[in-house]
Length: 296
Ligand SMILES: C[S@@+](CC[C@H](N)C(=O)[O-])C[C@H]1O[C@@H](n2cnc3c(N)ncnc32)[C@H](O)[C@@H]1O
Image 1: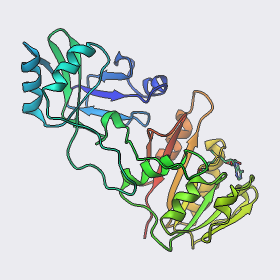
Image 2: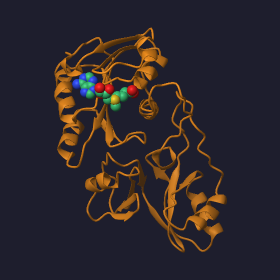
Image 3: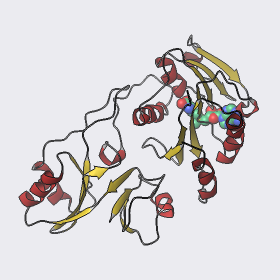
Image 4: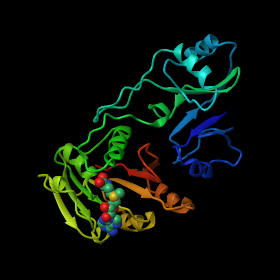
């Protein structure tokens, strides 16, 4: 069995470090002769890869159509030929998503051309978005583009704060996550050493504390706990452990920010936390998003 792992642009080395050394690389795509394994840095996983030989452009399209109806071409090589094959497949355009929205239901396959008459295809990819990247209708209102991380996460996990929910957000400045939470009707206590943008701090449901967030003690009234704080993941984990020791029921959403290589040990510590998962959002930079569902 072959599995493909697509790295986010610029994070190929991080993904390679998680995969067996024998992985074959095609630019951002890594092929492994084995069943799928966990890979936090993969933006899309191509399951059950098939090597398909084709006689012509029409034949390639026909063989893909037999296996699935929607396909995203990974244009690593043979771009012209791939584009001609694409034209013979059912038309697929990833319509920009208007948040909040549910995940596209139709499975989306991925394929690439290996050589003149061979292609590699998976009709079962882990992401319903082309190459793992959702395309949201963007808005110019929030103070930074970080709001796209929350939109992407909420869309992927299929849940988000509801009107009236109590959120604690640390590392909140300038406030684009706060803006997302406010738009959902949640109440937010935002904490940062730096001030929020004035248009965010003046929102009715937003309270703000200007201080070191890691001095805060666990609070059982919190239903959603968010951290996008710029800090070492180790520091964040030591603080979260206090919440976990009190058996917090809150949904926990944290960005794990890395400075260089060699983060495997701390990643494992986060991974070990029951029911949690780690993912690389297409809107994450050199960071991963850790999520532990709420226990309500
Ligand atoms: C990437 S920014 C957060 C962006 C924010 N999520 C948004 O959407 O606008 C990281 C923030 O973490 C804050 N930060 C870092 N260490 C902190 C600490 N110990 N306590 C409070 N805030 C902290 C920084 O001041 C900075 O504003």
